[in-house]
Every structure is written in C-alpha cells, then in structure tokens.
Length: 134
Ligand code: NI
Picture 1 (cartoon, rainbow, N blue to C red):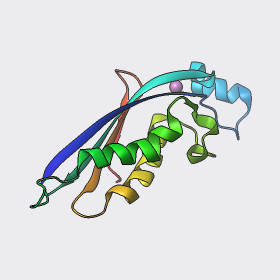
Picture 2: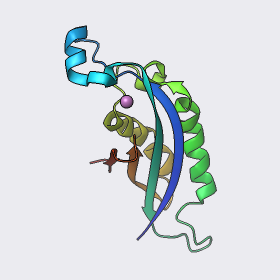
Picture 3: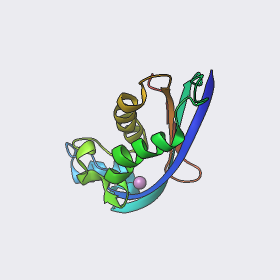
C-alpha cells in the first residue's frame, strides 16, 4: 500500500453563524468569526492503493488535479461559502467543509485502484482538520 497526495490552494470568504440561533448567541458562539472574513485555505487530498502494474500509478495525479479542480476549486475559490450550493444549510467551518469535500471526492476517486484516504484542510498555517471518512 502506498499513499499519494495532491496539495491545492483556494481563497474563500465566509460568516460562521447558526441561523437557528439569535444574533446575540451567534456572537457569543463564534466571536469575530461571526463577521464576514476570508481565509487562504490549503487542502491535501491523500489517496491510497497499489500501483497499477501497467502504469505504475495509484492514480495519475493529473487526473486527481482535474477532479479537485472541477468538483471543488471551481465551486469554492473566490467564493462566499455561505452562498455556495454545496454548503446550503451547513455552517462552513473547516470541519464541515472537510465532510462535504469527502462526500464529493470519494465518489469520483474510489474507482479502480485508488481509494480516498484523507482530506487535510488548513484554514490557517496553525489550524487544520483531517478527515478520513470515519
Ligand atoms: Ni473563518
């Protein structure tokens, strides 16, 4: 078993708010994150599998790049996440973003040799989440 990773970058804005709660409670819960602001996100998508004997690839990283571009980056880069369709009725925290990205990418990736192993999403240099579909 070997692991391959593609690292990507995107910039998005969001507001953290739970619409079912009053404004005052949202301020208390999210603090400054309840204001409109942006992040420069980095995402690492890791696949695992055995290399195909013919190509020597688990998955051609050009193909993985295209999947991430089409399915994720085109939707979220330079976007206001609260208004992006894939985050409808979801608070766009890093945790929830990783869940949504997992659901989208695993369908596209889990064919043939490769399996989606983890998504790491960095909101800042110091804060990131990792999701392994568990
Ligand atoms: Ni934020």
